[in-house]
Length: 264
Image (cartoon, rainbow, N blue to C red):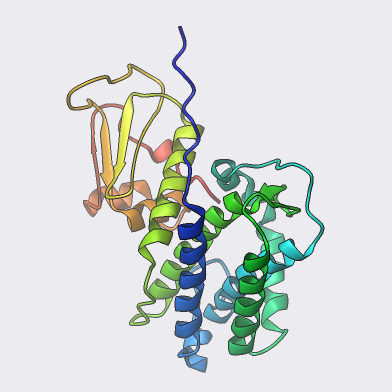
């Protein structure tokens, strides 16, 4: 008899909304402190400067409001856990949108406008609302979970691009994005032979092979949330983090290099 299909993870909608709003606020406050020299620095993301990265983060909030301003779609086509695998095809379109956003107004003005539009749109719409999106139609509740990934990962990008910036990361936002990308790993490589631990937020089993039922699993991977997000999004490499001991892997199946990154 095949194993029962695992139920999708659920998220507390109120906490996710609050986390998205708070994380955007942290970035907005930090961007206002950046000097022209810091804004001109390379972001570490292709050819983007820090200014273009900051504009992209403003666009994340503004595009959410824009999606809610359009007529709703009929039914969702994409769930939160499927979203990471659909992002690569939009890289060029998103990069173009970031550059267009940057030319629209000074960054502080962009952030003020985006924050106001997002807050108003979220106030008026329930999580069941289906958004008509480039990537595929999604419920607002699911799409907001994906916004935690975008905001936390790009907060980390900013912190690494501008030494000393130290933009805070909301715990609830970090929890949601860690769980989403851990679940995406389990979708990409279903199975029960490897246990992946990302304390204190997530534990998933993945990779085909003998299923572990009790005691200490024979194949275990453990890392911290930020390292996991960097691995899942291609910001760092599996071998590098093993060498740095930020990833601990034991067992003959506990090599996840072939599965990473999850997002391009």
